[in-house]
Image (cartoon, rainbow, N blue to C red; front, side, top):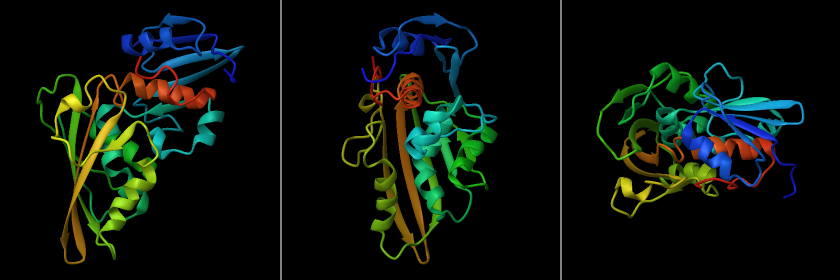
Length: 242
């Protein structure tokens, strides 16, 4: 392994701790209640991946962030489950500046609207979204639908290209337009799936985006480990999905 191993990693989430114990880049682990993500140490330097902390200066979905600040940061925050779905569904549209009005997000996991909006703001969208919680059992999977009005592009394919540009090379956010939409596609997996449909309306388009991920996968522990790997300089998939 090219990078120095992490000497000690602390976590309070059992799923995160399980992955840390099996992680080849982590020498020792400690159960630390109250640590939502992971705290890790090399030498005397402590660093941290938090979950759903809007006060953290560096926060967002790893796939939408610049890796360089992450490598240098003492702390970062990945989004909670509802905010993860929101960023997968709306992040490419928000960062491209094509949203016309606040979108609507329906999700089967409870979320704090202020927190979701804080994470959407990391992609230059400050007008927020309307969040609706629908308590539908999905066997440990977070499932959401976002509905957005966007400016009509010259070519409808440009909307597809926005998502391809941000997620096309990502292992942890994948597009699936053909499979029957079922939680079994992501249950126990480290990646999220999304799909989108576009309905043109004069100078605007109605875009519907579905996204889902395991609550211990992209919407949970695996996202924490992924962020830690980037910060620590490891391969991004090291110890993920264990």
